[in-house]
Length: 110
Image (cartoon, rainbow, N blue to C red; front, side):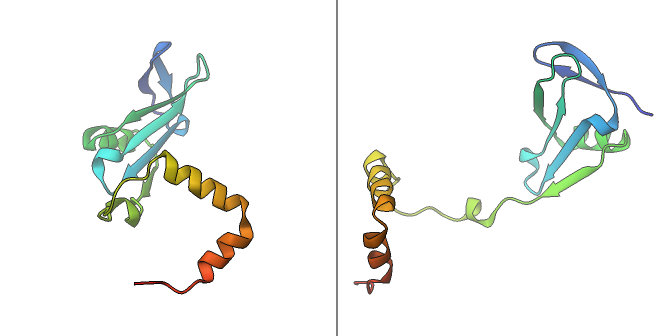
C-alpha cells in the first residue's frame, strides 16, 4: 500500500494511507482540497489541492470526489448588501408566522 506523507499544523510530518485521505475536486480548481484526520493528535486537517497535488494523490490511490459550485455562487448580486437591521427584521418576521404567511400571499406591487 502506498504511503502518503502530509503535514499537520500541530504535529508536523505524518504518514497516511490512501484510505486516510479525502480528496474533493471542485469544478473551480482553486477550491479543490484534501483532508485527513491527523493520526497523532486527531485534528481534522484540510489543505488546498492544486492540479499537481490532485494528480499525486490520485496516483497514490486516493479516490477523488468531484463537486460543483452551486449555481447561486456565480450569480451576479444586485442591490445593497444586507445589514444587521435587515437580519433582525427577518428574524422578527419569522417569529410572527401569520404576518409572514400574509406577506407571502399578498399581490406584488410595482
